[in-house]
Image: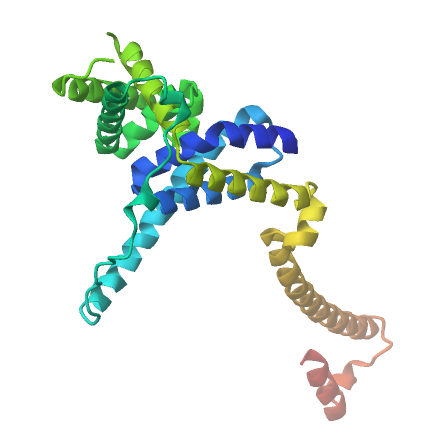
Length: 189
Length: 122
């Protein structure tokens, strides 16, 4: 059974990547944060008694299911939104927003790089993330769990609810697709 | 570059992205983690403690509803069976009395006895 400290360490180790994975799926920061928060709560409520080694596949399965639930709710909500939007006036643009409020302070890790390098790196990252978002859901999921979370094939299969052969196929296809897309854009890693 | 090398090179870039999250996001993640762990501190671990907090599990609730119905059904069947057995015993006693000459055969010709036999059979 995972102790409170072990659970804390585990969640701290996965929270950022979980957020990024949710972002690739839902493409909205607040929604992604809500999904990660729900997943953490569900893991603690239902699986706190499991050993630490089992938490990663369980957590990412919960994360995937919570993301799926979000899309289901959104589908229902969209039906009502479409019906009601015909009755409400359009939103006016908010001109009071200060652009400076949206600027983030410079990351200290990148401060030793030149501005040009930082821009190049940011662009490369944006391209990689966009290509990952374009992947089919199962391929993206398999790729993330195998290469980013470093789950083995069996754990990935357990988390995704599919066979080990399917995991290998999804990973291979995802990697080839990404390599081809990045190469086409002239990006070498 | 083979597939594994490509994948791990992409992973390095993704790690950078994860490390560069804005503070608004990282703070919210920390709060979410703390709230989840607070819930873990209150969560009972044993089956019986969980039942006290969350209520009995579904199969227990089903058993608690079905059990009284089952008891009543069995009881009704038992009483019915006992009544049939009692009537059978009474009839058997009458037949025995006839066979042992304790009850004359002419008793069957008596109207009152006929009514008694009819009521017993019912």
